[in-house]
Each structure stands twice: as structure tokens, then as C-alpha cells.
Length: 442
Image (cartoon, rainbow, N blue to C red; front, side):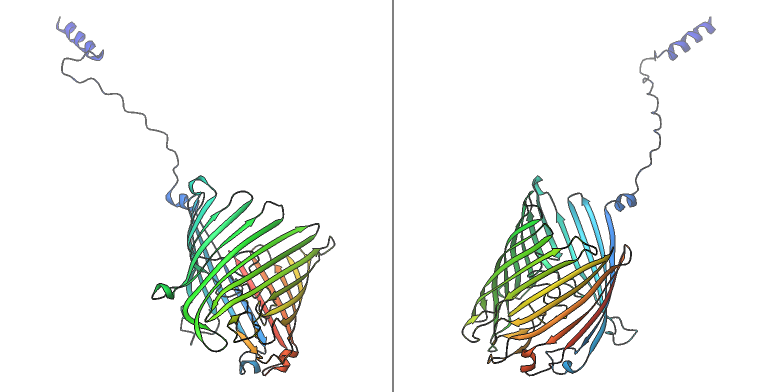
């Protein structure tokens, strides 16, 4: 009897009929999920971060060294330049990007001794960019950045320079399908007071709705209020100028062309600025072995008509890519000048191009100065007696891509001095300039 009772109670317990007050049995523990490989933080970051860079080495030789300095004009000059850049890009999201570009530039032999390390490291670029704001083709960029517009005749990062240009500021870009417009504001130098700041800002718009064509309008404003601008009479003051212009660029049926006009107004110390410039190019690429291209170019930048008449007529090209235009020797500028040029380019092999450029230089106004690519006054004949023919130049250079990551660029330029150089005081010897450059991308 006792045995039968015990068996009944055990069966009741196993069937779930717990005694009053006893908690119901717990659900069985969930099965352990199958292990799935999870991304590590490192792997996740690798998808968002990219790192590359470039090492650039260049040797230059020049004889005579200069036409400006009387001492330098009697000697030769040669030097090695080195530039190392790292490019770090971080994508927080598909539309938020952070870019950092440190740069180390060296001029070999500048350090006093081999155990001295001159600090040449700087931040060339460092900015954030946010794209597709509010679901529209609108972006904003802020920080230190390069600026480049059109053919870089007025605004260029000047990558040829071992340091190159970068601006501190912000820009906003709106870019629907067939056109875009961009506005920017940059501070060149912070002064003690608001009136002493040096600023550069502007608007640039382009219509690209026609295939292989660009139609641009722009306005650039520059305010240099630090009392460092000097006029022809030696007066010191400020520079405030507005440069407006239009540009068209296109290609069709083997032809390519550009045309650009610029007008400049404002105040130069105590003078009123009334200046202008224009440039035009026309080229044709032949359907033949080596793909030869023959091109012509004419540029004009106004000069001062009558120094001392309270009007400043000398066009200032702002921040140009001076080395690319007006000859590789850098002895002429887009400033009080006329340049008629002929260009020939051939491609004898994949990754190889050979170029021959011929330039003819005149002053726009005889009483204004001859300026070099840096915008520095080389000479001035205030009487206007000397002829306006400054000289000619031939540039021969070649680019070679030695594989995917290594590129070479070498060339020779000869500047033939003209009657103006021989009729004004100073060096009148022809100049030779030679360079060879190697870049390694990684």
C-alpha cells in the first residue's frame, strides 16, 4: 500500500501537478547559438580609412640665376628639393569625410649641419566634408584645403612649388545634374583688428550640360588690409580688389579650345584699379601615329598706362599657376604682358609624352614693369623709351610613367633675351634652366 502511494505521488510530480506554492518548472535553457565570426574593430576601421602618399624629388639648374638681383645675375644656381606627403582619409559615413595631409618639404643642404633637423613638417590640408545635406546635392567643406578653379589662371594650388598653396576657410557647393555653383571664404592672415585681416572669398559657377563643354562665371574678392602694399611712388597702404570673369572650354572633331576674359576693379593704396586680361587657346589632335597635338595660345594682361595718375591699370592674376603658363623658366608673368605661344605634343609610347613649347613675350605697357612668374618686378623703364619686346623662350620636356607608381619628368628651357632686356640696366645674358623630377606614389 505504501509502495503504491509513493508511486502515485511521483507520477503526479512528473506530470506537472506541483503541490500548492511550488513554482512551476523553468523553461529549458535556450540552445547556444552557432558561433558567427564577428568583425573586429580593426577590420571595420580598415573599410573606412585609406592611407597613401607620395615622395617627390627634383633637381633644378639655372644660369644665370636671376635677372632681378645684380649679384645673382652673374652666377648660376642649382638645388635639390624633396617633398613627402601622406594622405589619410576617414569615412565616418558615406557622406561624411575627414581628410588629413601632412607634408614635409626639404631643400637639401639647408640644415646647418648633418646633425641638425630643421622643422619643415606642416599640415598642408586638413578638412571635413559633408555631402548630400538635407537629401540635396549640397556639400560643405571646412578646414585647410587647396583651391582650384577653371584653368588655374587665377586660383591654383601651385603644385609645382615644393610647398604649394592651401587656404584656411570653408566652402559650400550645390551641384545638380547639369551645373554647379560654389562659394568659399578663406582667411589668409589674422590681424589684430577686423580691419587688419587678409581675406580671400568668392563665387564660381559652371554649366556642364553640353557634352565636352564648360561655361563658367565667377567673382573673386581679395582684401589685404595689413598696410603692406606699396605703389610705384613708394606709398604704403591696403589692397582691395574684385576680379570677375567668364570662361568657356570645349572640344569637338579633334579640336580643343578655351577662351577667358577677366575684369579687375578696386583700390590699390590710394589708386583706383581699372585692369583687365584675357586668354585664348586653340588646338588640334591628329589621328596619326604618336597622336600629335598642335596648339596655339595668346594671353594679354593689362599694364599701367601712366604711373602716378591715380589709376592702377596693372592686372594682378591673384594666385595663378604661373609655372604652367608663360614659360617654364618663370621669367614672365600674366601681368603687364603679352604672350604668343605655340605648343607641340607627341606620345611615342604608352606612358610617354614629349612636349615642345615656344613663347614670345612683350610688355603690354612700356612704362610699366617687367614681372616674373612670382609677380616680382624685374625691371622698369619709367621713360618708356625701351622697346616692349622682352624675349622668347623654348621649353622642351618629357614625361615618362615608369610603371604604375613611379613617374619621371625632365626638361630644358632657354630664355632668349630681347631688345628690352638689352636696352635696360642689368644682366642681358640668355638663361638656361634644366630640371629632372621623380615622383613615387604609394
